[in-house]
Structure formats: C-alpha cells, structure tokens
Length: 219
Image (cartoon, rainbow, N blue to C red):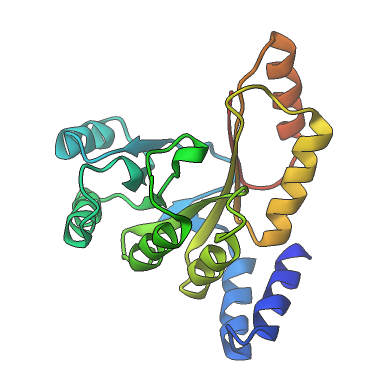
C-alpha cells in the first residue's frame, strides 16, 4: 500500500510514466534482489569499505563469501569523479554489487559539504552498473525525497537509515520511524542504535523479529 502511494505521488509530479509504472510493479511483485543477491529469509553480509587497501580487502571479502559491498564514498581520500568511478569499477571486477553511501558528518560520516553537493554525488554515481542500492538517511529531510526518486527512476533499491549514537529509542518511536521510512518508499530499513542495557538489546531484537519487511539493524 505504501509503495503504491509512492508511485501515485511521483506520477502526479510528472517524474514517471504509466508505462514505467507497469515495469516497476512487475519487478516489485518479484523477489527482491540487490544486484544478483536475493534479499529475504537468508541473512546477508554487507562489508563497508573505504578506498584504503581496496583490492586486498576485496580479495578477503571474496574468500569470506561476503554478499555485498557498502561503498563508503564519504571516507574516500578523493571525491574526484574518475576516482569514485574507478572504485566502483574495481568492486564490479571482483564480482560484487555495492550499496552507495555518502554519509554526512552530522550522521556519523565524513562528508563535510552541503546537502546539495551530497545529492549531486549520489545522482552522478547511483546509475553505475555496480550500484544496486542507495543509502539515504531518514533525517536528511532536505534531499531525501529527491534522492529516493532519482534512485527508483533508474530501478535502484533504496535503503533508508536511522542512527542513534546516544541511546536506543523506545519501541513506539522505532515503529514511527519504520512507518515513515515505508511511506517514503524504502525498500530496506536500516537502524543503528546504542544500547544502554541488556534489555535494550532484547526488546529491539524482539521488535524487529515481528517486522516483516527487509531490514538491517545494529546494536
């Protein structure tokens, strides 16, 4: 239902045609894949990488049968377009699909420029063949709808993420975040919390166990 509402909104804004909708609905009915990696009952392993020791780490990832690579562009030593493209090309050469992440400083990342520049980076590289999904923060209200729309228009999956580096929210607040993410068009939900007790861990694990939607959570 939330996905259909999202399609209605982008049709109304003239961002997509009815023919595009038919294709998207067909793919949406199919099992979800990030690249060639099926997302569902089997937990998947994602390795976050910067550009440091890239090939060495990709060899290790292949040996360890990692499923996906998170391209942490915000941690790269250079944001030159050819440099980023070379990173993604190398990931593809090793047989991996990637999740494109440009994490801002205010959400625990290293990207220091403004949101429009961050959106520009996302727009330039989300269409790379090695990119299967784009990670955008729930708190990124200035650019999140545009980042989601441009990703979905080229058939990339969207991971909407929420981070709390101080505590673990109460269950009712987590469910509000879940509903907001789904209403925005998330394909995968991602949460990172800081537990302050064993009870925090137990209740969050129980809560997410009851949420039948593709998700990632870290405590």
